[in-house]
Length: 238
Image (cartoon, rainbow, N blue to C red):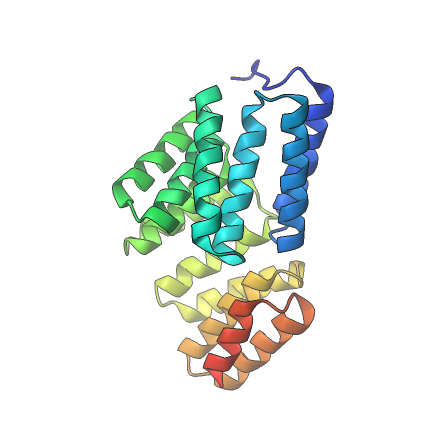
C-alpha cells in the first residue's frame, strides 16, 4: 500500500488535491468547486479511482446538507461504484458506500459492513471512523460511537466536522453540558462552520436554555451561512 499510487498523470493528481481541499470546507459553493476539480482530474485520467471517490463524497455531503437526497445520493453511489470497479481496495470508496447505505438506503447491515471494510483497507482514513460513529449513534450504541469519533479526531485533530461530531456524540448520549463545551471549542477555532452552531443551539434547547439557543442559531446565520437548517432551528426555538 505504501508503494501504491493511483495515477501517473501529475496534472490529474494536482487537480485531485485541489478537489480534496475544497470539499472538506463543507459549504455548497466549495463542494461544487471540488466537484469541478475532480471532473477535471478524471478528464486527464479517466481511470483515476480516487477522483471518482472524491465525486462520491462531494455528492454525499451535498445530499446530506444542501440538495434533495434523491438527486444527489444516487450520484454518490454511482461514483463510489465506479471507484470500486477501478480499485476494490480503495477504503475511501467503501466509506462513501457505507454513508449511502446509512443516510439514504437505511440498509444498516450493509452500512456497518462497508465502514468496517474501509477501516481494514485504510486504518488512517478518519472518515471511516467518523461515519461509523454516525452509524453507531443511529443504532443507539453511544459508547461505541464515542470511541470511533475519538479515533477520527486523533487522525485529523483540526477538522471542524470531526470536532463538532465529538460533541454530537455527547448530545445523542444526552450529556448536554459535555456537548456544549466541545462544540463551543470548535466554534472558537472555526467560527464559520454552520453545523457547529446547529448542534450547539440544539444542545441548549434540550437544556431549556431557549434564549441561548436562539442567540446561537442567529449567530450561526450571521457568521457562518443562512442555511435552511439554521433557519428552521431558529423558528423551532422561538
